[in-house]
Length: 306
Image (cartoon, rainbow, N blue to C red; front, side):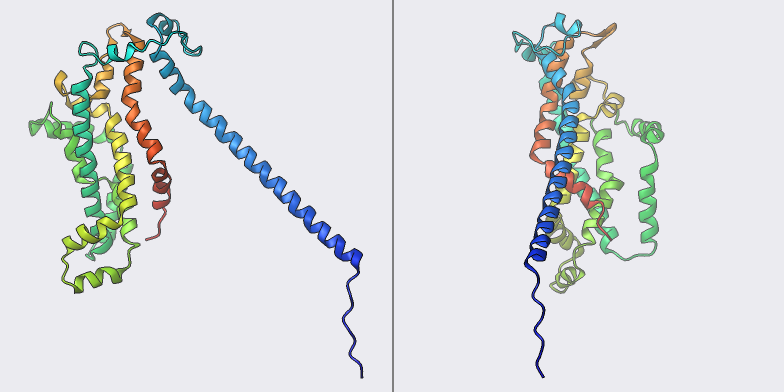
């Protein structure tokens, strides 16, 4: 009994199948390229739209007062007025040096306070087992829905009763009392660390403080970077807090210094105000380009499973 050999595929049929596959791959590549071109086009248009105000400010800072008052922010200045910058930062205008020093002190203390307090509270919620832990965590998160304007007057009355008005303490102390959103970020990160690692540290005789300070905190470098960047941006640009609590001219920050260009009948020396604005925003712009990948990680880290 002879065994029949399998039928040999016809050459024409095989060629048509290969041609169909190549045609399908070609169409897929064209489709992907179209989507990529559309996405990049939308991003470029969006970037241009967001860069237009920045261009107006930079162009106005290099223009004369008459050009700014006329509203000519589009056409580049023929002769850039670089003298606007030292004139804007002079003592009789913004008084830049003391305002910069005050802003740096407040910002540094605020960043350190947020990192230490939020990481401590997040470590407690992530690794300590106690009755009502989940309920307390939900209550803490629910405070994020409370507008800051609701507590503004009670907090002001409290600091006035403590005698801290016209000092930096009302701007620094709240940062050392933890922020619910940053606590949530630290807690989500701490829950991803294996429990076996902590148990091994306990067996070696590590206390809870040593586990937090020498093991957990160094591991959460990305979260620390995210909290530090966002806290820096908020504290550096904060205007309402210093406006409420700081009264003396020697205590005002950069945001209040920019407000000094506003006179009784509107903004005076608008070209100088734009020059001072460019100088004040430079640290934030440099920080964003230097650490932009952490902004993306901040979105991803909030979605970690507990």
